[in-house]
Length: 304
Image (tube, rainbow, N blue to C red; front, side, top):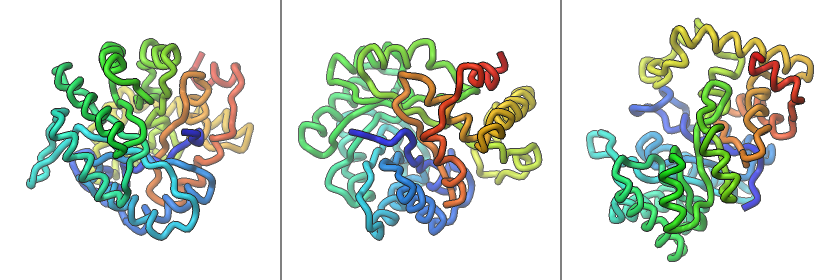
């Protein structure tokens, strides 16, 4: 796959659920997807569990009326829910197959371009069973490529011996750099793509997030429970935003674009997943695709 340096992230458009971002207007979600595609983004990343199937349905709705080339569709399995919306994890082969069929139906397609294990489970044998099921789905033509999300090096080594990993999807931003030391070097060494998520730390590094806005987040917004949005991290993160703002102002760029460009500076990073809840937000980050930071600017935003 030849993918653009930024992809459209469909987590927030799932609406209200345990890890949701609060209520969301589906018409705004569709408009955001269209705007991303109009501006050249050629892939959308979603997951079955986002909004308990709703995100995939909204993506399908957007693409039904889209007149241009169909973007690549990436989705994930492994997080399941019951009739009451209680979330659980399963990578047993039968469960993975059920999930794949359900995602194909919701997305309205015959094949998924990249199918990913959303979260590995503590039992490595079960994770391996799920991965073997993904490999079988690939052989059957239901999915084109297979990848993992949130996986450790040890897990990837095990899975890679069963079937080649196309890509890893880890969290990566200026406030979450853990994968710099192990996962990203491993991916580069083994020719595995890395499509990183939350490069703007779930909105924290956009430049639009203030203490007042954080205090006013919906009760159902998962970010209210996230330690990066709380003290003592919040004060340090808002200082970081001011460093991003200072660098961005010299180039007519937003703090969020600088934050995304920081992730794309890493040679092992293939692309970044950036979410949007309305078309205006897309315009605020799209130009990070062609923005490069100097070594001095990288040191400046890192606070060195």
